Image 1 (tube, rainbow, N blue to C red):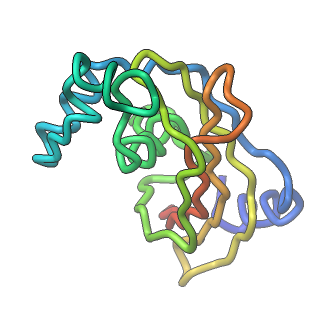
Image 2 (image 1 turned 180 degrees about the vertical axis):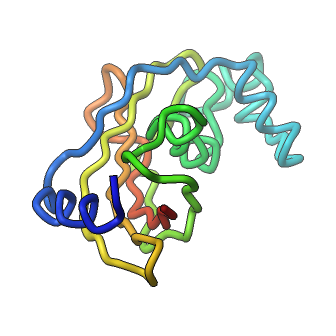
Amino acid sequence: MSRDKVLADLEGKIGEMVHVSDWLTVDQARINSFADATDDHQWIHVDPARAQTDSPYGGTIAHGYLTLSLHPLLRDLVVADRPVYPGVKNVINYGLNKLRFPSAVRAGSWVRGHFELVAVAAKGEDALEITETYTVEVEGQERPACVAQVIMRLYF
């Protein structure tokens, strides 16, 4: 599908939920791997015994930026043979307009992403800029764990 056809299709979907992911478990192993990758080993993330007694959450929690970093996975942007839109060859994370972490993700929680299309615009002859609101739902929690306005560039 051409860039112009995807643009026309998406213009009609502004304000709509364009994707809801499957559920994903955020377990302690994932939290520990993120801690290792970022050298952020705060006890509230990696010390279950201490977190059980000293944390207001009663256990360890995921890093806020871990929750944010799940965006490509939950948005299905990481499967090479399944482009986010037909004809897209490459997706680049372009930035964020706003980011909040209204609640925590406890180790062992199930999360899923909700993606609402906010804006779409042509960029040059071969790209679109997409702005979506990324909301991370935590099973059994009223408040989301992450709400971010994410900007992506799609190249055709």
